[in-house]
Length: 138
Image 1 (tube, helix red, strand yellow):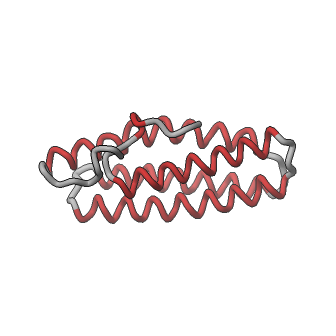
Image 2 (cartoon, helix red, strand yellow):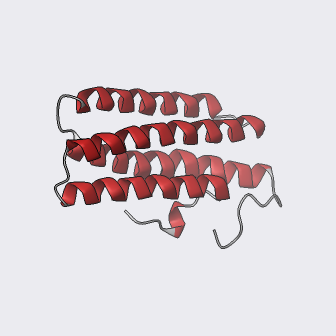
C-alpha cells in the first residue's frame, strides 16, 4: 500500500506516523514476496508492534489534550489492536502468520485509520478552527 492524500487525518505528526506504518507494511509484503523466512517476518512483527504502541500513545495524548469526546472508545479500539498484535506475536513463534499479519495490518489501516482517525481529525479541525495541525500540502 502506498500513501495517498485521502489517508491524511490533517495532523502532520500523525500522518507521518501512519506513513511509517505503511512503510513497515510494504517491507513486510516485500519480505513475503521474496520468500524471506520466518526470522524476517517475526522481526518486522515485533518492530511494527512496538511502533504502533508508540503511535497510539502519541495519538491518545493529543486527543487527551484536545478533550476529544470519543477518546474512551478510541482507547478501547487501540487496546484491542494491541491485544491482537500480542497474540500474533505469540503465534508467530510457532507458526508462519505472515499472510495473516499483512491482511490484518491492511484491514486495520483501512478501517481504523480511514474511519476513526479521520473522525478525530475532522473533529479537531472543527473544534479548533484556524489552528494549523498540518500544512495544506500534507
